Length: 233
Image (cartoon, rainbow, N blue to C red; front, side, top):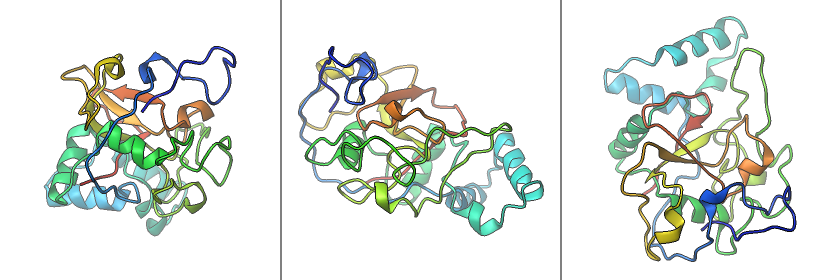
């Protein structure tokens, strides 16, 4: 996990994004399974319905806007990644599926493979077709791809959109210096923090954030157009 310190190419893709991904550590993980795709918006809305929960105001406004103003078909919207999801909602969704959120270690292994890829697809810089990133919309409409697309940029294990499209909640508390002290086997994250870890970058991210070692965090009750999730077991 993580990245070795580099000083000779400050703006290179292989250079650490920040100190939170250092030092690079070799870890061992018990066997696990990761969903190929991010959870879709239709799956998330069905979860809210079954739990007798209303979609958030932000999500209701987004759906109304893209359907009534942009005339986006339902079948297209259904395959968007889930967004405006809190960490607790992601945990409960996965639990009801008999699954859970992946740990940071599991997420990074699924993204990088056994060779420690720089990006899920290898070492080539992000480009159209490999990932959805660097997008901008004047009304902040998410410019995302269907969760079941992205074959060209899939990881060595076949997981899709692990770079860009939508950033993903994981199980761990986000510790800025956790890599210094984390155990070698099945690390579970910091004991406590203000933030939960978020991995993978989103449709708005710069290319360097799409590196599989890059880390970020968000408060657990945050709802954002850039954060979704996938499940593991």
